[in-house]
Length: 370
Image (cartoon, rainbow, N blue to C red; front, top):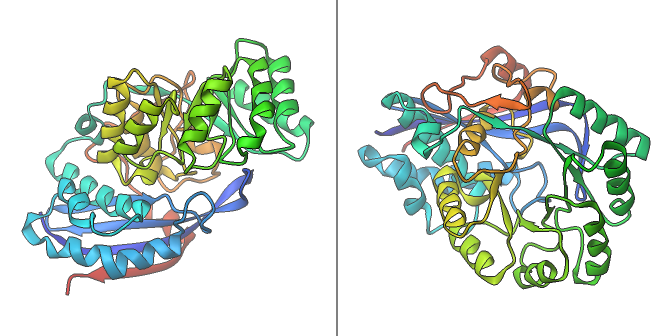
């Protein structure tokens, strides 16, 4: 396979409502897509980088720049030796930029699998035809607004609720949701690194609510701090931002810092590395689940394939398209009996609806081999 050209698309996709976390609040999903044209067909991928370097050090304008100036020239240079498995080793010299690397690797992988007539789910070793769906609930303006949203998501059939938390919005909202909807509700929280080692006693109070997990409570670099917190509280610690590779996952597990792992393919450099993290976790009896970055249908389809692997035993953030978007960029993913079907077509199994994509596109650039 040979890479002939890459189209970089910047899209502004309106959200149904504001989504607020401990680090940002957005009304529009600003996203970078990578469209790879090869001599055997085309492939699509969504870069996980946000508009600002708030979730990670990457942001979509920077990702586009590093792709154009550094990563794509090396991928073009592979010539006829290109395959998805060669992308990461070829780009290993470039420090970081995992979201940009994941985007080009995934686009190449999509083209490769489409040409072979193989689904991404099959390639990854998926064992499920549909996956249980949870929903991420952002920080709200009031407790009444929070309870209204949670009630609505449960009525839609979501099997698990994740509450975003931050200092000042933690114990009380969690208590209200637990008391209102009962002990049987699968409930977890996500701090997105909003706390410090000084907050251990505050976080220990959340043990009162029998949570599935607390996700990434303190800074991502503080693996030892997470291990100390895990020994101090009963609620299982789940690492997200800290886990950027299978090697880091192995170290965090060995240190006792990760009792559960959230795998986000964009954060770790792609689906091939995600499979390695899954395998390390399974070998150490650590449950994993699939997180998300507000993906449109292109990214959501690939995440569903990953979430269908056997080690993904907890509901992920692979919600229906209607959770975030009035109109998605592909045929929408629909929640049925608390689950979403895994695409079975070749590659990621979905295609962008070009007229919708065009209506959201704010910039378009072609990059070609020299």
